[in-house]
Amino acid sequence: MEDRNTLAVSLFSEILMADQLARSRLTKALPKGMEISHFSVLNHLAGTGVERTPAQLAKAFHVTRGAMTNTLSKLEVAGYIHIRPDWDDARRKMVAISSAGKRARDDALAGIAPVISEVVGDLGEQRVRATLPILRELRVKLEAGS
Image 1 (cartoon, rainbow, N blue to C red):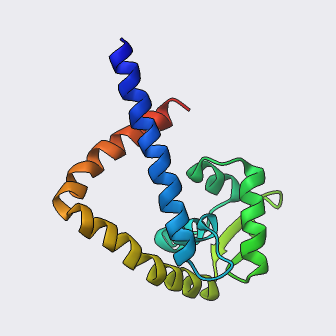
Image 2 (image 1 turned 90 degrees about the horizontal axis):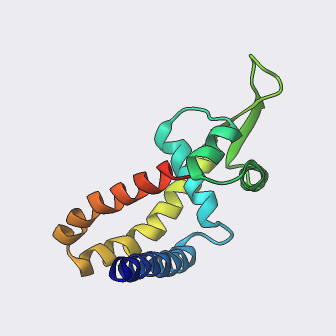
Image 3 (image 1 turned 30 degrees about the horizontal axis):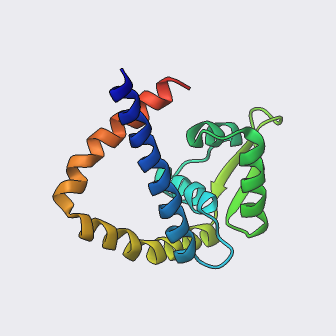
């Protein structure tokens, strides 16, 4: 059992360190003033192409509603998103990406794409493709436990 625990700790230590290093490199590549959380929300909204409630976004990113509200407030001030009342339930709000938000997301993607591509190139596309299913399965297992 000790070997399994040691393996588990090693796995999570590597994942956490890789996450920290990736966030640091990506933050440096993002446009000035943009945070990873901002890019992530803009990328999600651009990718889905549909409005979301703040609660839906908080759930999608596994953060508290307060944390999401903070991120959305900053994005709204920057003009990257539009927040409007839900026409069916005025207590709820709906969030959509703006044209400026789409441009900001595209600029951010242009900044981080070379960083990501370099890492994939260094590791090798085959190895990255082989690793993705394992990481996805790990994510699903962790989501199920939360």
